[in-house]
Length: 116
Image (tube, rainbow, N blue to C red; front, side, top):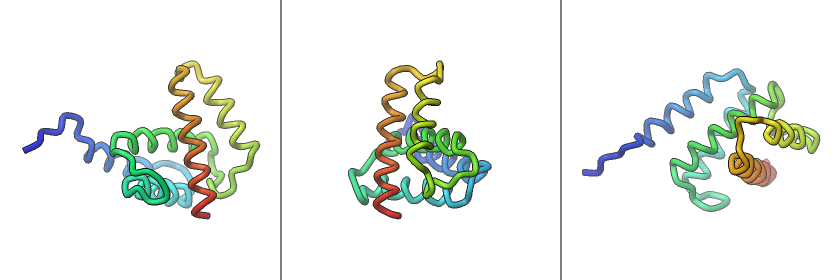
């Protein structure tokens, strides 16, 4: 029997439930769910661990809140620059956090362009 210290499965379910309860366009919720499913399966890219997917959910939630009512499908270059500026200017985000956010944003936008 394997003892799981971090309860990753439960945390992943809670994170996805949290996304469903947020004030954001339904389309964004659907896209986040699809991205998570693809990341866990390794579809359209490398298979990611559940812990990494949890981090991605957190970052995508933050990005969705920055965008407000705008759907991910309609994100422009100006929107991406706005997101990057906010991430860079956030005093709570260290250099490595900013790096992680930039990598995820690039990965997510690339994925979004492929599935759209």
